[in-house]
Amino acid sequence: MSESVLKVIFIGLDNSGKTSILYILEGKFAQIASLKPTIRFTRTDFNILGLPIKIWDLGGQEQYRSEYLGREQYFRGTDVLYYIIDIQDSKRFTESVEYFLSILEVFEKINPEKYPYIQVFLHKYDPYLKGFPEMTEKVSTLKSLFAELSKTVNFTFFETTIYNFEEVSRAFVAGILKVLPKGEVIQEVLRDFMKKTESSAIMLLDENVLLIAEAFKDEQSRNVCRICGPYFANMAERLREYDLFAPDTIEVEMKGQWLFFKHIDHLKTGFYLIFFTKNKENFTRINELLPVFTKDIVNLITYIL
Image 1 (cartoon, helix red, strand yellow):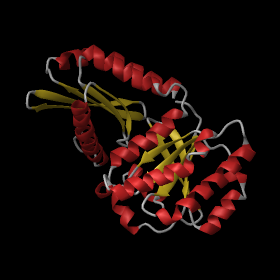
Image 2 (image 1 turned 90 degrees about the vertical axis):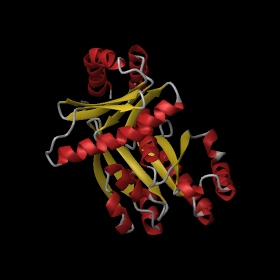
Image 3 (image 1 turned 90 degrees about the horizontal axis):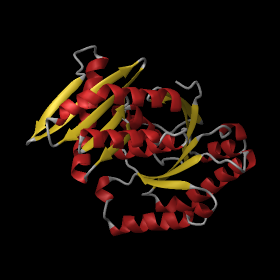
């Protein structure tokens, strides 16, 4: 595994939800209710498929914002920056955009030729708000404020909420894979394996139950993997945590169709593979090709990431 450590920053105004996102990613769901404002900053060690990541959570109170902007060392060496905006607090949209501009100015001073990869989370877009015309208008207004910036700086919008782990997970991992050499190759390996095994969908999760990559033939098959995969992985991780009988393989019949769940260990790195197929006979093909496929994935993790 590469010895390099990625530096990731979560930043935004106070009460935008930065720390709650990190708690979701770490599986600390029960602690969210008792969260207090971040004092200055916190640093957290994280990993994806064994790749070490140092996450900086920068408090959003005004006095801390002034401190960060005045000291380049907070931002120097940043690989990925996640900028968090409370989509429900439209009164602070302008303030949030101005803070984002100030951050970009710091990166301009550090290295005008190379910005970190940037993602903007339109956060607190909770399920009950989906489809509301008022919320759609807020999103449109906010994106229009960023419109001019997008002509000079590349960044991607994601709509997130702590009530949807899958959305947060996918957005976070997408940022990490963007800065890794050939990180998207994993996606191609999954597509190739899906074709060879005639599967309808395949998903790769790491031991944090983060969605690393997926391939699918149709939305229904993808949704089956997205719903079932994380539940099986969470169950296996909890059993492993208590040194109980964690399953390495699970086969489930679903009205004539089949879900295949597999845990794979490699040195200190573990991951989960979930396959959905409409023909149980495909399990034979999957098991035949799985050793080579596993080796390919491990090689990607070890030598490319």
